[in-house]
Length: 265
Image (cartoon, rainbow, N blue to C red; front, side, top):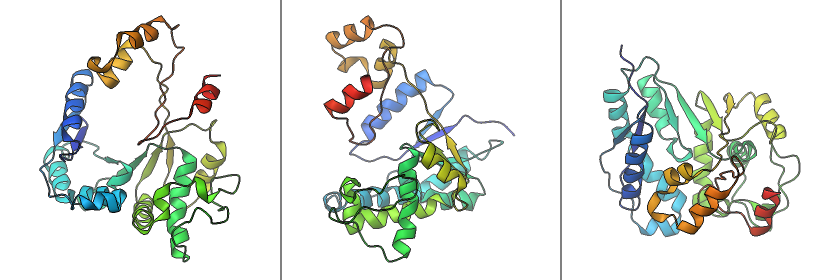
């Protein structure tokens, strides 16, 4: 058998494919050990569904690529000595594709261990008759959190049927994979990490935390040279080595000014 490079699949959609394709081209230059493959187009759900429930829209759109993903894996990946499928949160429909092809699947969970615990809690809550959350609900006892969690701080998608049921479905598939790669480290989240390690129904959890020190090269790779101002780059260049750290906020996330000051200190 020959060992093929890791394959990354791009699902084309007119809302983001140009950005994804451009970024993939840059990564091909800096990381030639990866190969990026574009998948054939599928007809997306009606765009009005985005406003009704964006989480459901994205999940259905990705699920509609099942056959294309299966064909791509069969034709490009199965020559690898140890193939496996590493999936994003929204790509859980491909867990069944991996089963059909007899290869292991893993979830890469870009959030931390505590939020992973809350995700895995959702199906259990649903099966016990738990309906959508309300901001006015009493604090919730969620495994992985030391203290009760105020309902008002939960993701807003859990406050409506579409988002809630969509995430319940994704979380169910989490328990069918061979392992979960979590973006954290034990010293930061010892309580939820210990909970996950001791939970028999949870697949093995692997902690992965990439600490990014910011340099000019890092900024250019992440954002491209055309969007960087001279003032910003001069500031980056002037800082002592390993004094700036890259923080990832996740989808549409951000930190407030007081939070940023606390992190900086």
